[in-house]
Image (cartoon, rainbow, N blue to C red; front, side, top):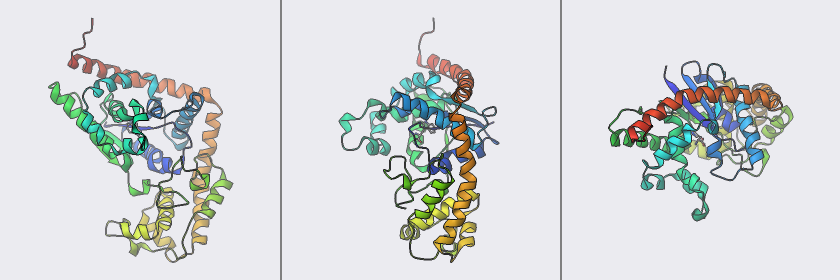
Length: 342
Ligand code: TRP
C-alpha cells in the first residue's frame, strides 16, 4: 500500500483551519493508505516554545487526531522527537540541500520577518527536517495545504540530489496531495486573512475545543456583507470560485466554504442551498452544523487531554512502530553515505 506521511506542529490553539485543512483529510485517507501522522515537536521549537506548553500542546495535537477519528491501530500516531531517525537524517540532508535552495523558501522569509539575523538556524533548516520526516519512511504521498507546496518541492529536490550524488534509487519520488481550496479557512473577522492561532482576537477563529456557545457566538458575529448569498452561477466551470469573485466577497465565500467542507458537500451544492438567502438564515444553519460536527470532537479532545497517560500510551506505541520502519532506512542511508559501522 502507498505510504502517507503528514504532520502538525504542536504550537497551541488548534482551530477550524487545522481541522478542515489537515486533520479531517487525514481521517479520510486512512482507508486507502498506510498512514503515518506525526506531531512535529522538533519543528515547533524552531520558534520559542515554553517547555510545559510544548508538552501539553503535543498531547493536544495527538488528542485532536484521535478525536477526529484517526485510528491509532491502523495508522501510526507519534511525536517526532521520540524517533531519533528524523534528526539523524535531517543532518545528512543539511549536507545535501544547498543554501541557494533554502534562501528561496517563502515561509522562512515570513516567519523570520525583518530581523533575520535573530532567527534560529533551525528555522532556516526547517525544510530539511521536513524532508527527513517524510523520507525516513520512504513515504510517497504527503497531504498538505497549499502553503507547504514549496517545502515538498524542496524535499523532492533533496531526494533527487541524494539519489544522484550517491548513485542510488533509495528515495522514492514524492507526490504532494495538495488539499483543495475548501482546506483554506480564513479569519472570521477578515476574509482576506488566513484563520490563525496568532491573530489577537479569539473571535477570529473557531478553536477545536470551543463549546457550542462559543461556536454560536463566533459564527453570529462573523463579518458578513450587506448582500444576499450568491448562487452556484458565481462559480467557474470547475466548480471553483474565480479569484476576483472571491475578493469581492471574501467573508461570504469563506463561510460557504466552511459549510461545504463541514457537510462534505461540493461547494456548488452548498451554494444552491443558500442562493438568495440572508446571512442570518445561513449563519443559523451553519451554526447547527458546526456545533454538531465540532462539539463532540472538542469534548473528546478534552476527555483525552484530561487523561494524558492514555495519549502518551498511543504516542509510545506509535513511536515504537515508527522506529521499526525508520531505523532500517537510516541504516541504508548511512551505508550509502559511507559511515562506518564497526
Ligand atoms: N511544515 C508543516 C506545517 O507547518 C508540518 C510538517 C512537518 C509536515 N513535517 C512534515 C507536513 C512532513 C507534512 C510532512 O504545516
